[in-house]
Image 1 (spheres, rainbow, N blue to C red):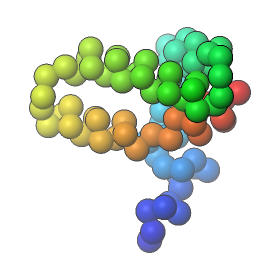
Image 2 (image 1 turned 180 degrees about the horizontal axis):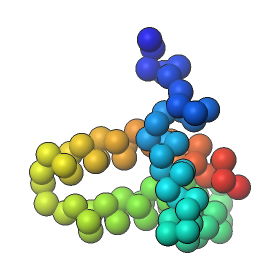
Image 3 (image 1 turned 60 degrees about the vertical axis):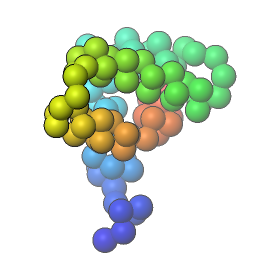
Image 4 (image 1 turned 90 degrees about the vertical axis):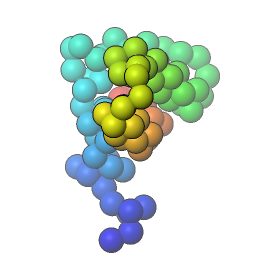
Length: 88
């Protein structure tokens, strides 16, 4: 199956669906809401959200390790524009 056409629960992939799911619960919603209030285009809001969460990832898993590499790979697969667009 072509990876470009794979979807998960209507989202572009599982990582995007999972990020949106966590960001819409009580603990994560403040980060998403802050991104949605940013001025500019949807891509600017997506960039803000990605950078905010990447900073959190760096704080939580700072040292080089297998776990950091695996988390970073999953993080890089998230379609941040899709997350913003589906939570407006």
